Image 1 (tube, rainbow, N blue to C red):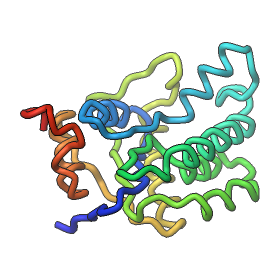
Image 2 (image 1 turned 90 degrees about the vertical axis):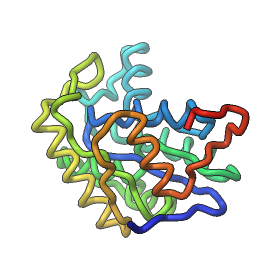
Image 3 (image 1 turned 180 degrees about the horizontal axis):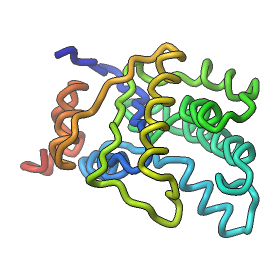
Image 4 (image 1 turned 90 degrees about the horizontal axis):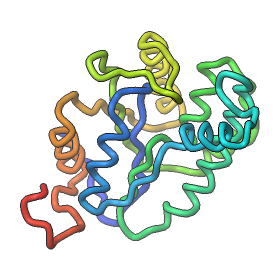
Length: 197
């Protein structure tokens, strides 16, 4: 198996359709001391709902995409220069994929940001998983929509010069350990926590 080593750290994206287990995997990585960055979409939805805003995917998808892009740019600038690996729950390319999925206007800002803000060449993609898929207050897509989202994102990352790679299904710990092993990061940064990995 090809292993993508990160001797100087890097901005690593986890992507895929909704409800595939990205958040749980990011929490498991965070629990070992790795820096993780939460998905912008959920943060934008909560912010817009709190202030009765319009930039929601069920009200104004173009405004929602713009708000996600703005947040993703800020998150990238804030975290990508750190000395070690940083795991992002989605990235700026996901916004471009969302625009394509929803047949929105692909703004010059979206295309420029996707070219300018680069992550590590491999993108870790979590496939749709019917057994764990759930709706909630912010996730309103059907499983079929989640599967279509996954395919569009896969194609968009390919189009942007990345190498999408499937993260195998499994327990949260199995997925966490697979990611760490694949990236050559089997030893967590928390060295005084024996037995956690």
